[in-house]
Amino acid sequence: MFGARRTRVTLPIMDIRLFNSLTRSVETFTPQHPDRVTFYICGPTVYNYAHIGNARGPVVFGVLVDVLRRRFGKVDYARNITDVDDKINAAALEQKVPITAITDRYAAIYREDMSALGVRLPDIEPAATAHISQMIRMIEQLIASGHAYAAEGHVLFSVSSYPAYGQLSRRSTDEMLAGARVEIAPYKREPGDFVLWKPSTPELPGWDSPWGRGRPGWHIECSAMCEAHLGETIDIHAGGVDLQFPHHENEIAQSVCAHGGKPFARFWLHNGMLTFDGSKMSKSVGNIRTVHELIRKQPPEALRLALLSAHYRQPLDWSESLIEQSIRTLDRLYGTLRDLQAVEAADLPIPQKVDAALCDDLNTPLALAEVQQIAARARQSQLALASLDSAENRQAAAFCKSELVAAGRALGLLQQAPAEWFGRGGNADDEARIQSLVDARNEAKQQRDFARADAIRKQLLDEGIAMEDTPTGVRWKRIG
View 1 (tube, one colour):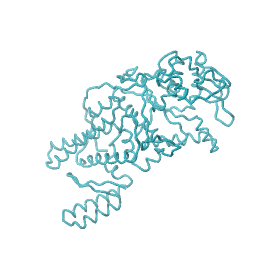
View 2: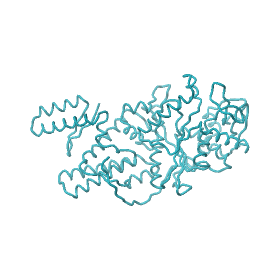
View 3: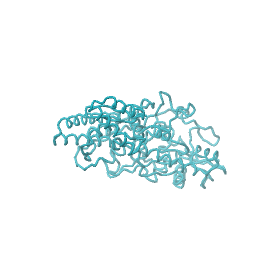
View 4: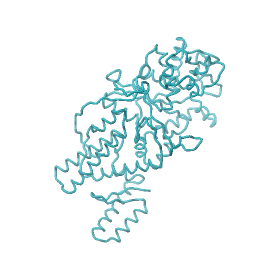
């Protein structure tokens, strides 16, 4: 992109410290196997478009995966696809199509939308319907060990058989029953017992099992897919804080009991929820914003920056002003890179302070602040280069540019060419035309033809192009 050349720099190795929801403390992370990290994040239920809150986990934990890869090398990163679910079934019945017509469509859209946000595909993307046999086997293990029971075509996990139930969410029994929205059913031994397998009527998807034709409960899906691809004990399990109970609590219970008491996940990471202009996002209120909609109206990189702007464990209020602020920030950063287009960038490692911030429980706000500091140094180097074009100044400017690109790479930012960012919504010919008008305005000003210069500025403003006079020259950007 920038004609980069590789430069090797050795940096000190820092500990990676993460807040473990299971212990409620920040702990130093080391994988159980030194040459492999196992990481699982709960993926989408593919029956509709993902809303922007669903994207926060994939964005922030994708940054963490990159940190882990830089430190440990191999990371087996899994993000599942839930492609059998009551909401999927309802959509398929309403549209009178097989569930695959729903799930295939929305899974493809989900991948495309996440890609637009700079979220790479996981190493492993297991689909629930491809792991029915593993789910049945795990359920049989739970029945054999006395942790589950069959009743009226259902199989249920016996919560009382696992004394540690509730250790992740630290809720009382009453709170857990209320939070789980427990279904009162005569076939349950206790109200809190949850479904592992349920019968399917003829119009619903189903699979043959020892308990009759049916389908899995939601919670058993993730446990079985984790076991199939990552092993009985994994290093990290992540997801939204709204999944902590009952989903993650139930995953722990069934996995630990199916595996003879072995821990399920050593670290649990949970990202905070998104609100919209101070209110909880809700379909009934109508304040849901889908990724599919937003990436067609706003620069996807600005949406990514907005999602990284707060610490992942904290709530994040989503608003138009947050997006606008993110666009302005990227305008300034890309403007700095454009001002330094005369020097070549090298491929540097992630700057130490940026890496340190990310190693400190994925502190993206601190990392972004350091990016701004690097950009400030880059602007100073450009001023020095403009005033005295010496070999020493060119070398300093090239280093600052390289450092800024490397810092952005750690966060999945600043990897476009500046012309691509500022030319969003246009094409190469249009960008060349705009630049020629900017150059013509500069020439008119130098010749003191201010009427012509003002006319060009107005023409560009009418086209939604704003110009900014800076000490290092004129920048232009699209504003509408």
